[in-house]
Image (cartoon, rainbow, N blue to C red; front, side, top):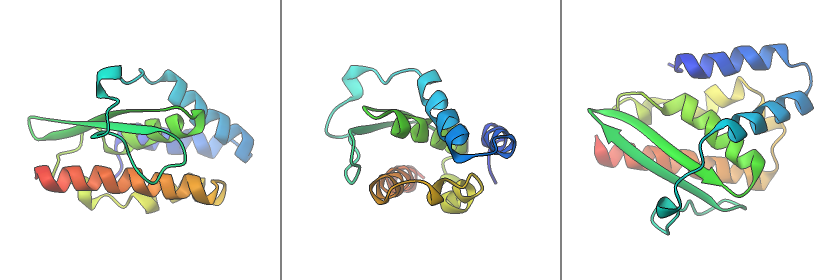
Length: 136
């Protein structure tokens, strides 16, 4: 049930042979993302459980879910960009049904992230799910 944008990332990853290339690709995804406006970098949007500073600002318009986000760490910013491709544009009722772990496993991310980064990624996914469930 991945979005077409996420499927593009999966296809890109299939062409990247080693983890260093994939790591760079994730970082490039984050660099291409617009920075989150400073007004949204507040305690209410901060994600706890991440080793770095992470903010997620969800928006629900006409029943569709999307979020913007930012981090002070390049790889985490890239992970936010990847999560945006996974979730943005979905009907809010579909967001909690996404098997984020399964979809991200297609990228092989879990094998190469530190325990702290993996915990942070899970915290971001949980925040996304919580917001969607509260809004559905």
